[in-house]
Every structure is written in C-alpha cells, then in structure tokens.
Image (tube, rainbow, N blue to C red; front, side):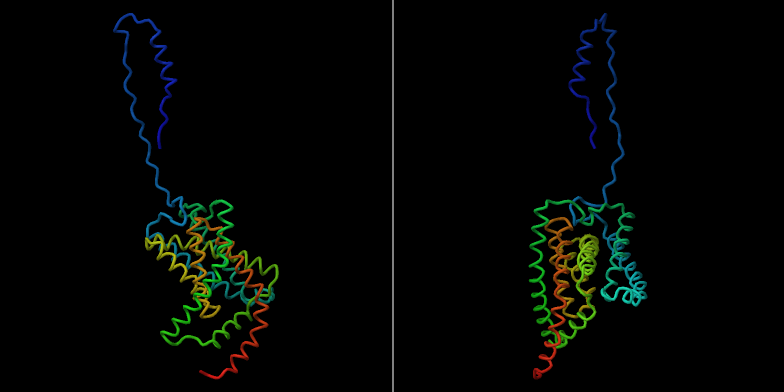
Length: 303
C-alpha cells in the first residue's frame, strides 16, 4: 500500500507564498521538522490467488477441507438413503437418481459453509468472469472431447482388464448398462433440469471448483491434483458399472483441463450439463436396443 504524496502544485503554491512574505532577519526563518513516515499495519495475505484454479492454502488446510466435505457428504448420503423409497414413490418418473439431486443440494451447502469459514470468495472455486467467446468456444470444444475420452477410456479398460485378468466380459458389461438404464429416469423437462443442468452445476462446483484446487494445494502439483480429482470422480460413479468408472474419470480429465485452460468453471458446467442432457435423451433408444443386444450376446458361442 502506498501513501499519496503532496502534489507539486500544492508544494509550489506554498513556496511562492513564503517567498513573497517579507523577512526581517535570519532569526525569523524557522525550519519545520521533517515529516515522519506513517507506519501502516501490514495487510494479511489473501487465502486465495486471483488465478483459479490455484488457491494459496497450506497442505494441511487443503487436506482438512477435503476430509470435512467427504465426511459431511457421507453423513448426508446416509440420511438421504433412508428417504429413497419416499422420493421414488413421490416422483416415480425421476427414478432413484433423485438421490443425486438431494446430495447435490447438500454439497452446495457444505461448500458454502467452508468458504465462509475460510473467508474465500466464489472466485476461488471458479465462479469468475471470462470473455463470452472463451466460454462458448471451450464449451463447444469440450463436448466432442468428452465422447473421445469415453472411447479412449473404454479401450484402456479393455487393455487393463486383459493384462491383469479378471475383467468383465462384453455380456457382463452390457448387463451392467441394462441395469443402469432400468433405474435411469425418463427424459422429461424435469430430467433435463435436475440431471442435466443441476448436476452439471453441483458436480462441477464440488469436483473441479472445490476439490481440484485443494488436491493441487495438497500435492503442490497440478498434474497430481487433476489426475486424483478425476480418479475420485470416476470411482464415485461406480453405480453406473465398472467400465463407467474409467469413462467417467476420462470425463473428469476433460472438464479439469477445460477449467485449467479457461481459469473459470463456467465452460465445464455448461459442457457437463449438455453432455448429460444428450445422454439422457438417448436413454429410451438404448433401452430399446438392449434386449436385442443381450439376446445376440447370449447366442454367441463361448470363446
């Protein structure tokens, strides 16, 4: 912080007035004491940087935040799990995935509380402005990247399962997908609002907005933070099937790279919401295709 010094204009006026005043003798000239410097308290450094997704935190504080949000979400999931039957009976068209919405609300509340305690602004989780062209360009580029990532991660799963043995067969993978499609909600406006837009908001704020900067602060490495955040994101989607763990981790990498590139969370939110919306709109098609696919797979001779 700097202090404003007197302007030359003010100093010149004072000097000209002194020069014009008559002086009777040398004794009439008095010297003013030199101004002393004003000591100001040192400003405390902000807990965050202005350059998302890097947040200036101690590794201990980052680990504590991650632990707190994990415990709070586990507690919320335990509470929500008891209300599953009530939710499904009340809104049968939306299916069991209403749990995701309830946990999303809980995660936003938890993040808000931690930010208040840390005295961190919304910009620390990526809610910051950027040029519309950058947001729209990154958003549109992320959609094809998501599908490319899913294909590549499916191939990676095939390679890993083949190399270590014990991987699921094609029939078992298809059965997992059929089970997920059975519990998925019907594509309605409510579906797009809850599982498209809202899921894009709360999952991106939780993972790419809140968790990723803390993983980076914890390991002091962007690479480690991004990979670990994507891995956790994939593991938490294991209810969609084994191969979905790999594919969802690939999606997490795409969203993380978009956030790193644009330094804002908005393109990742928009891409996540649109990706979910497209996939949910295709669920009826997948459901109609699955019985025939399962019959064909079951009729194939064993290898």
